[in-house]
Length: 398
Image (cartoon, rainbow, N blue to C red; front, side, top):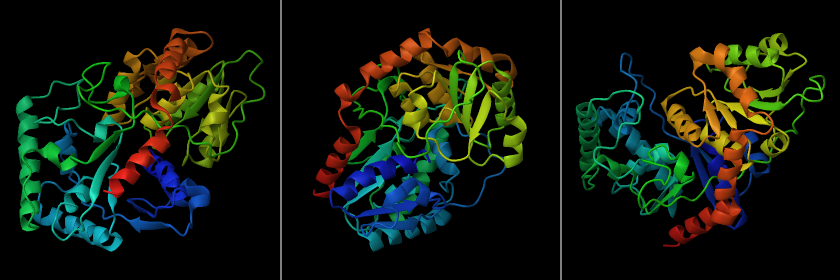
C-alpha cells in the first residue's frame, strides 16, 4: 500500500488531465479498493509485474542497496536476464512515453535495452529507494558496525551482474551501481529531515525535495470508543497484522487509560473480539486519515513513511514500532526531530503506554510535529500532486 497509493494518487491527476495510465504492480489483489472510482476507467490499464520468486535462505540481513538487489535476482546474470526480458516485453507492449518507477530497479534496467522502446524515466518514492549517487552507496544499517569492505564487495558483485545483463542486451555498461537508478527526474516525496540517506536535517546536498503527499480521504469516518471517559486522550493505531509484536501492542493499548481506534488489516476476527474493550475498538475497513487525525492526539504505527508523514502534516506526533530496516531508519530520523518516539518490539510492555501518554495533550512532541507541519506545508511545496503530475507531463512530452 505504501508504494501503490502514491502511484494511484498521482495517476488520478494524470488521468483527469487526459493521459493514459498503465499500472504494473507486483500485487493486484487490493487494487480495486485502492483505486476506488478509478477502477475500470477507460484510460487505465492494469498489468501484473514480472516478479522474482526464488528465496535466498541463509543470507544475512541486507545492509546496503546492493544486498537488497541480491534478494531480487542480482546475483546471477543468467537468471536475472529472464526477468529483465519479461520487463522489456511489458514495456514494448505498453510503449510508454514516461516510465515512473517506485522502487522498480529491474524495470529501469530493462528500459536501457535496445529491445525496449525509447522513453523518459522518473523515480518516485521516499529516500530509501532513491539512494544517493555515491560509490559505494552508503550502508543503511547505521545502528550496526558494518565493515566497509563488505559494502564495496557487495556493490561490485551487483554491478557485475547488471553489466552482464546490459552487455547481453546490447546496452552500455554502468560505471557505478547508482547509475541503475539514474533518471530524468527523481521525485523525493519526503522532507529533508526524514530522508533515510540524509546526512543531517538539511538533507542531501543538491537534492530536490518535492514534499510529502497529502492524506488519502478514502475510508470510513473515525469512530472512537464511546465509553473511555470524557477526558481520555485519543490514539489512532494503524498496524500490520504480521508485525511480530502486534498482539502485545494491542493488549497494552486495551489496558491503557486512553481511547484507541485501531485499524489492523488482516487481523483475525477472533483476535479482535478477544482484545476489544471499553478503551479499544477496531475498524474493520480502512479509516479516512483526515477524519482520524482531526481529533487524534497520537498515532501508533509501524513507521511507514506515508502514515508518519500524514500524521505529522496534521501536527499529530507518532509512536513508531518498525518492522524492518527501512522503517527503523525512518523511525530514527523522525525521532531525531522530536515529533516521534521509537519503541522496539522487546520494549513494548515497558515503554509503549508511557510513550503514548507523553504525547497526549500539550506536549513537546506535539509542538515538534506542528513545527514540521508549518515548515513543510502547502505554503512551502504547493500542491505536490499537481506539481509532480505537471513535471510528468513535461517529461512525457519530451
